[in-house]
Amino acid sequence: METIGYARVSSAGQELDLQVEKLTEYGCDKIYQEKESGAKNDRKQLQEALDYLREGDKFVVYKLDRLARSLLHLKQIAEDLTSRGIALVFIKEQIDFSTPTGKLMFNMLGSIAEFERDLINTRTAEGRERARKQGKHLGRKGQPKQAITEALTLLNNRDQNGLSVNDIAKITGVPRASIYAEARKLKEV
Image (cartoon, rainbow, N blue to C red):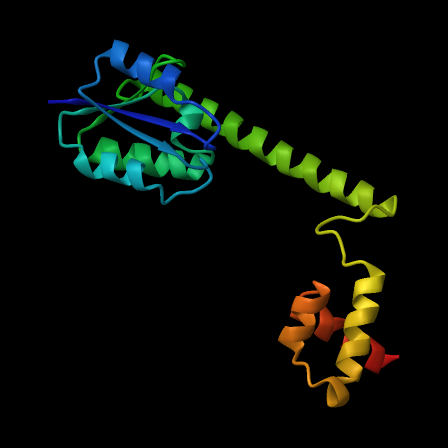
């Protein structure tokens, strides 16, 4: 029987030190670490840890949200581990999923984590909509009008200058897709 730890942060700029320290203090024999978004269900180190676990082992994660962001994914992992006879423990929340109280707390905290993620997504969408209504440009910055005009002039005079669309894109700095899109707009007018 082994105690296996899993530590995760979302981006390369974040550190795993605290999680690794807590997992080591807990007594983990082996710790899998990765820097991936919790929204991704196909994380390599997580999958390796889950594949490594055997009946009677304990899978330890520092915090609930380090394992997954959706309740569905959390439940899938927990149910898989339970069916294989593997205990699931979250240090910070003091949840041992092998107990009835742990199962209840797990479901409640998982629901809260999913609710929080939905709130963030809703606020982000509302912010984008508000910015759109205020006339703010979202997304990539467009090409300068002068560069587009130059690109279209070169495109219209291809018979004389012998330039390809690739050449025009290199000369003007306007991407090929933008050149074609602007040319289509002119034909529609």
